[in-house]
Image (cartoon, rainbow, N blue to C red; front, side):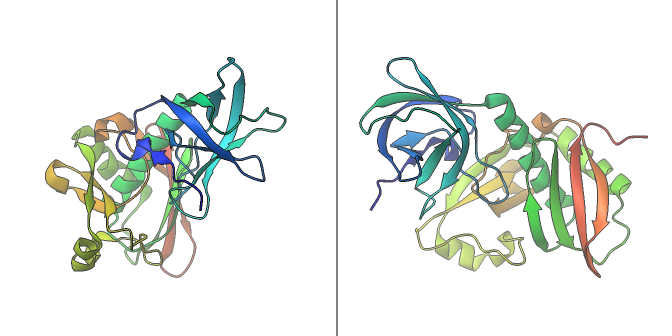
Length: 246
């Protein structure tokens, strides 16, 4: 069984680099480390990019980061034609911070959208320039103008954003914490990570393994660029940076 990777981003999403030990290279050239700041593709958020610095100063460009058989197996996927490290090497791993910060702002905005639109979520994807969240939403009054205005009110309020851990039993006792219609958070490990917004989660609290900014004000200007009809009651909300165009 592969040794797991310490996922430092789960406790501090603002860590941009760390020292790490290479614990293996898989058959596809994916690099496994004993600890990392790289987020692996999951929950609609894409994996981090960046680079690994070897002891001789050589750099290995990382094109993406994915999980293996479990969430604790984080695989750093090199770009083509990169040299590969040897197991046991001590390296420095550095994420593409501007890209990560964009994704953190966007992911937080997606959480705020689920507050403004309190309906079952049927899909979501976080991107650097645009994200989407799909809802089963029977109410046609949720226009892009109304939703954009309410999003900016939450952002301007500068609510704190934080994480905490609960048990499987806590989640079972509070099923409304799960907003997704079709996907349940993984259970069986004994604990589940919650992302809260507002004092003591007064604005929102939901299971999530992704990375987020520390306060809603850091999201900045955001708006709904488009609402697409995907079914009789299913709507896709596309979130974009910047103020709503006039």
